[in-house]
Image (tube, rainbow, N blue to C red; front, top):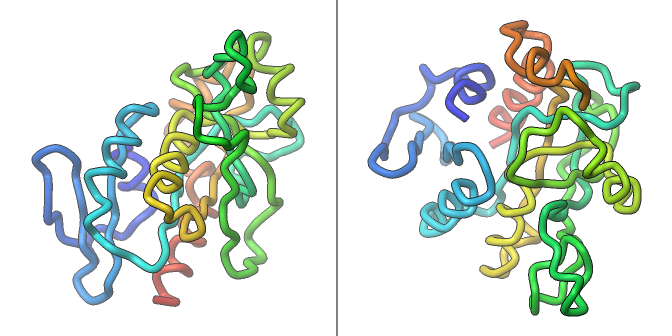
Length: 210
């Protein structure tokens, strides 16, 4: 989302090079591009497809997410090991819950980044097109997938990379913005910089290494 980009990047270092369908930023001095995916699986998949012509050695998805794990502090940083859809269910036809039919995958494995002391843990995340404040519909699936985080985009992004045979180039680092409960919406909307501060430092380190 735009407000995530505004809070995670020093945009004085970037120029907007595309803003017709999806906003794309180009670093002024380095071969770094930011693609704003928007909210939800459809937007995220479309943005990835739109940006696939921008060939890169490495793709890093960053953003804020909800946490099932109440021990994860707001603003804590987590590398993503794997992801899957929580709201795809074609099990009546013999497919696993979360599986897109006929693609052969029951999870999307992501690549790791270089070790970073800012990262609190490596964990799994599930994605779906709902902002979750009541975990009842997703808790059992999250537990079976050993997912501690939830977002609305990453599984769709990973699926596009899988289709283009670029899944090994995709990594993701997330910051906890809220715990999944009745206060989720208020916590997510809170203007506090806490949920961005550490992730902003990680993003800065990634840019410095390029």
